[in-house]
Image (cartoon, rainbow, N blue to C red; front, side):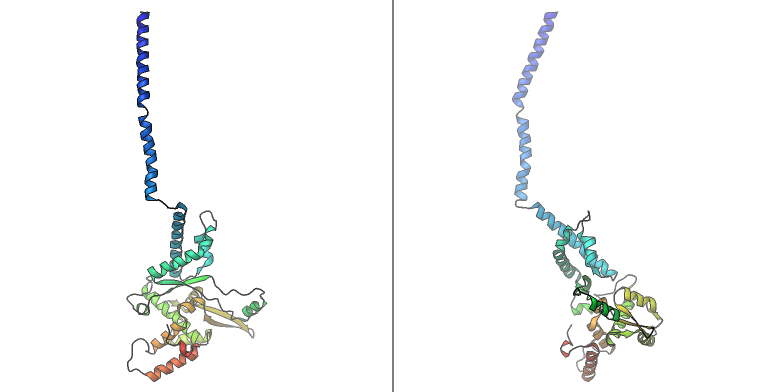
Length: 316
């Protein structure tokens, strides 16, 4: 019995030895296949993305995303009639998720790219708002006491249309916003355009009593098409169409209104000129044999009231 067990154990050991030797002979093929599979992806990448810089691609993607954010922010500010400030761009767009401001160096390139998209896609562009005029005695006194040179830039922008004149005057193309309603927006646009025009035609400053007398002729001295007069005037001041000027003379407060930066950009002297000519029936249609003397007289009065030079008339 012990001899038989020994023979069996010897046989088993010989079988396992031969199997291990055969396994060693066949083992090199799988590692070679694995080597080929691991070496093949670099060859495909080198053929498809040869010369590509990952850091440059990431920078372009980041710039595109920041540009889209700036365009959306500009449209949102225009919808709410609030200026787009440089500080808002820095805090909302140029700061990364960790609060770092590493993207501030890209402001110029991102702003220029956003201008291109706004112009080619939406027919608008960002225009810098002018500075508020120092009209009160206190403001002028503080300005003379300043040691530093006053800033010449406002660092805030608003959107204006760059569409051709034919498109701007076409009612089917350019319409008022639908919120809260088209009629409400049209009424508000007409009212603040009227108020801005009255201020321009009164040497760029209009007293509160005189404004109320003008509006009384239109039955708008108490209620306007978009609400009470006080609420509407407060809204126009908040949105930057007009500014309230308060001065104390002889112990009494004298209140007057001047045109604010948004009113200068959105309406301006050209808008006032167009409004007056539309009221008088000039400029809305083409007259081949129209009243030339009356039109010339109106242009002369507008030039004197708005401070226009003769060469400025007729320009868009």
